[in-house]
Image (tube, rainbow, N blue to C red; front, top):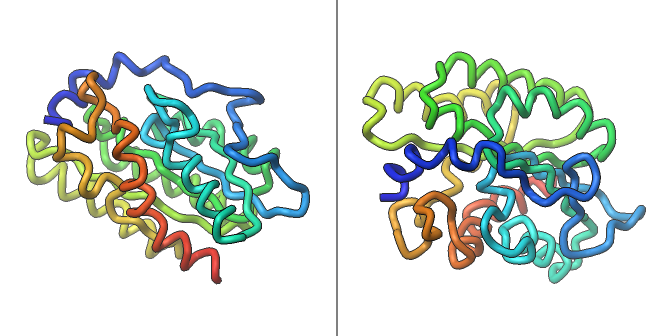
Length: 218
């Protein structure tokens, strides 16, 4: 249900932006400390707490978890609803320059796939962003996405293979699918049939946290 309605609804959220305070960058949950390192979340509506209070989104929950575990990191969320990899590529330089993060969580590509854009384009855009992140000296956590079955076996296979291939090429840590245990459950999706609800956010964080924690220790 989620993926079928997602396909129909994606254009409705194309221009809906995540609440922004400064050039699309929002410090979550805790005041940014000059002494803390920074984690930049660079994604689309799946990371932008779309349709729910900002404090309930997985990125805000991540900030809380870092605080609870006494890890000196601030989370800066530069996610925008409806963002594609092409849009992300136009923003990444400014984000890296302004935030100067130690870690980047790169969560883009879902909107490319749902619009049926060529996988080659998505791959090239993600590769360009990964190159820029690596050049900046930041470590990267690449968030994978999967497409619904109605896109055809060839497209699905090529799209799904993109993330592990890029992670290997650019030495990125990979989360294979951020919506594991969420996408197929209607009770974890908002009434629009499109976005994960507040109940889904801790599950999303649990999908991301193990790989991120390993990255924090490197």
